[in-house]
Length: 585
Ligand SMILES: Cc1cc2nc3c(=O)[nH]c(=O)nc-3n(C[C@H](O)[C@H](O)[C@H](O)COP(=O)(O)OP(=O)(O)OC[C@H]3O[C@@H](n4cnc5c(N)ncnc54)[C@H](O)[C@@H]3O)c2cc1C
Image (cartoon, rainbow, N blue to C red; front, side):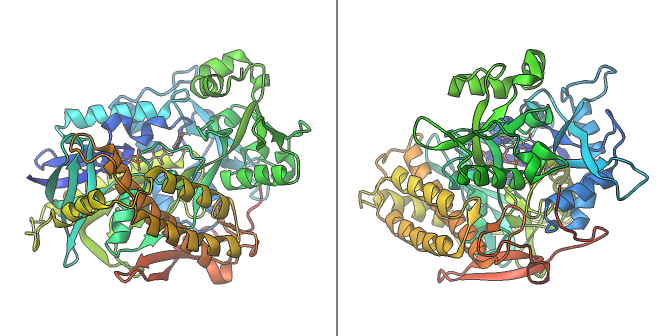
């Protein structure tokens, strides 16, 4: 079946829905999602969305921008960061006016809390005074993403956006440098649908499922990024993958940084507050890359706590916060600790370990979400990307907490506006070939494989190796080994058997496609990590422990040729007003 829409947005998380809201009513717009829109991963975001609103204390967008640049370890593009931080207060008020129910201060203003890496000068008149944590994160208890997603969905329904839920994106159709649409499978029937469009936006989210311990939903398999990579287009800064310090031990389910924002403390087996050593000024509220490394360093030094299964964890102590704060400010995450670990957070520490959380890298775009086909800024006509799947790059080497919910609403809106401009003159361009052909071939070949390899075994091996060899600490030996392992996994993938041959909700087939995508994503992360011989942000090379601005203050662009050959190019970092300095907290 062929559909025609002026705009097709793939992904119904915050980025996709915010873009859809922006498309003018005289244009047709479809949103495709492999899950029901409000089940997108944005709905699980807990802690907050930041903006220098100054509701609880004085703050400024410039401080926010400074923190974001420093948090990115100077890899973020400063022009884009300035746009995002300057636009943040407007974006929050806009969400409020759309109906998003924020938590409130006693005076009825939007309440704000502290989050890692968000600071201001202790003495605003003295640029050399120390920087102290600031209340910048707006929140709705610990269900911020949930209410944001519901609000945006309601606004899309109001604007007559056409939803195709449980449609699985399988192909991106670019011919002669023009993006003409996408192909997707209706999961209920396995029927192939072509979406012919003047403009396509990818808002397909992240790829935490490339790692074994992750906070990401099962859908986070990087399908959009993988299709871009398969199309021979570049992916940017894939080596920068963020581990969040506090996932529930062994499960990875997130315990939001809000827990530390409200005063939670990390403790080792001697009950020491070890973050005092690693980040003396901001302590437990240091950025995520630093806290994750500190946790692993404590465990490696024999100061972890031995769990029942022989693995180690660290304690998150919330007991001193009191029942009122726990029940009112962080009810959901403390509920997870009770349900999944049987721990009572008002009386006992919560066992945690770092969990794969957020992709700083992704599809390269400018700050109007237009996708680049190379490191020189050439655009793919009619193709846009926003949200976690995109790399603008506002997060550089390491994202600060609450900056992603901000990123998706700021750049989702900018993308929607840019597309609206484009639609004024854009036309439909006819397909030169059969737009269903690649999808049909892919499905047929997957269903015909009969090597007997089990899909979930290959996925587990991939996730474990990415965790062990391409995780928080990396080195050349492990990464080179992992490269070979990934090649073997790709061969094993050619020998899988998709057990279910039926057409109705064939989740076995979907998982097979997702696994193929995960292998591509893992390859691009590992190769980019092997190539970058320095430590910056979330990318820590034990064999190159220092940041090397002279050689490496540049973005990685990785592409894969049809022959399978991988190629790496670079793009300079955009600097406006913030000079690189040592990253101490
Ligand atoms: C547990 C958790 C807590 C978080 N808390 C915070 C927080 O407090 N503050 C903050 O700033 N950030 C937080 N983040 C990060 C932030 O929530 C995400 O980065 C952001 O919501 C991503 O939004 P998105 O719109 O880009 O993608 P998503 O919300 O992930 O949506 C992706 C969409 O793409 C669709 N899709 C993907 N593949 C396909 C396919 N093949 N076919 C069809 N559709 C497809 C999905 O169905 C989905 O609709 C958190 C993340 C997690 C995992």
